[in-house]
Amino acid sequence: MIRRRTSHIVLAAGGTGGHMFPALALMEELLARGHRVTLITDKRGLAYRKLFKEIKIYEVSSASFAGKGMIGKIFSIPKIFSGILAARSLLKMIKPGVVIGFGGYPSLPTVKAALSLDIPTCIHEQNAVLGRVNRYLAKSVDAVALSFDETKKVKWHKYNYGAVTGNPVRKEIVEIGDLYYPTLGDDRIFRILVIGGSQGARIFSEVVPQAISTLPRASQRRLQITQQCRAEDIEAVRELYADTKIAVELTTFIEDLPSCLRWSHLVIGRAGASTISELSTAGRPGILVPYPNATDNHQMENSKEIVAAGGAWLYEDRQFTASTLAKILQRMARHPREVWQAAEQSRKVGKPYAAKDLADLVERLALVKGDREIVKTNNMVAENITQENHQGLRAER
Image 1 (cartoon, rainbow, N blue to C red):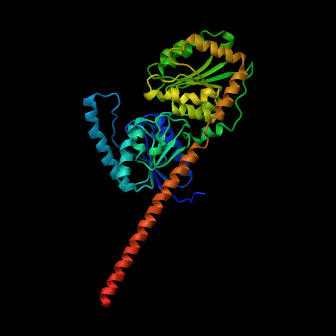
Image 2: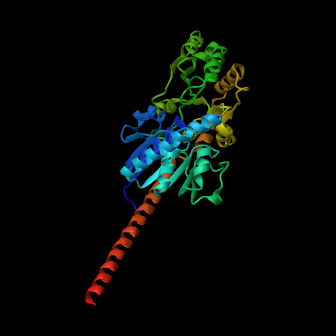
Image 3: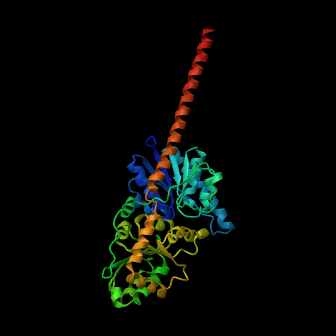
């Protein structure tokens, strides 16, 4: 049993949804346990501020070295140092029990500032390859939390403490895994959810409607599709669907993803860490097309476990064509049990307690700080008593 002591926890996350959604799930769990939570993020992270409406949010500057020439890297350094100084000021004001970083360059200034102030620190890695910033920080922080059992570029022997917690997802998605998979029979509606990351993906905007348009009319009438598209693609996608006989909903951002997952039979998307963890936690099968330009090919690595378990089908960009997808969908329509079995296998690799396990780890670190402060206070008291005794002895003499 962990001794429960409420604390103030700082989440350092920014950039894309892949970093922000796990932070959101941990926030929900920590608030439910009575802790105070603050988010320190970057400009891009502020786009998700509506999801973090229950807590205070601060922005600090940061910059990435990736994909920049020498001049670009030089100009990034002042932004990073400026962010560290700003984060130090914030942390001195907040006085958190723990700072946890969720990887990516937006988390770097805050975690570095926490290390300089001797605040307990933890980093969480969402992907199956330890990211560059997390690789840099891993040897300095108090704990490293991973999402996948087999995470590449990890050096356990160099870390203070490491654990596989899984990738936190929102409680609404965890609850889906406890529900029955929607019935999918020969005469039932087949519901497909198409997601492409927080910004959508052009390949799905082109391939999916083209594949649907080649299906027989009887097959089209069985389909219901909700598809996320990039803003610049949505009208062209609408035109591609115009001649089909299916019910389709197009959107640039899916605000209520848990509801969409709950009714879906199949998900088509990239293989980002959040997508994999949400599918496996909810128990939904997927057709995965890893983003080919992902750093260290981490999306391909993310997909390996769920694909090996039989919970998803994997296609590279060049393999994912309209004719290929049309054949897959027709096969699934003829053999619905195959889809149901994939859903079961997907659920088996899920880690529904990831948010709880990560929150437990954070609480342990908060206890460490609390114990440090007790020891420090006791030492100060002892020192004062000793000084008083010495003064008393001098007075007696």
